[in-house]
Image (cartoon, rainbow, N blue to C red):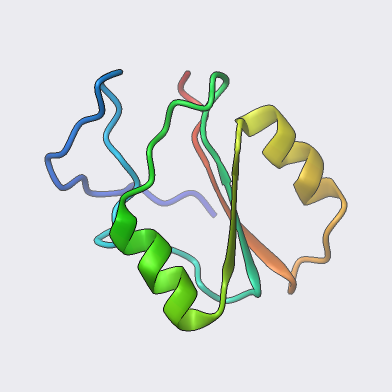
Amino acid sequence: MIRQTHHCGHRSPAGHTPLSAKERIPWGGSRLIVGTGESGSLPIMPAVWAEAERRGVEIVAVPTEEALRLLRDVKAKDAYAIVHVTC
């Protein structure tokens, strides 16, 4: 499922809107794989890391190509993903 996200107005130095805790993050598995774009430029705000820790969810933040490789090797119930594909 593709979901459009709403951004909180923050921007990284590279011009990316960071992944924030205000997004609809799929927290259902024990691991959240975040594809951070071709160059790994998508930032993740500290509140997302804190929420993951609170929920006991491991965040794996890697460039998108690597994230897609990781997703091939996991069972659907074990991990959820957010994949940045525009750059």
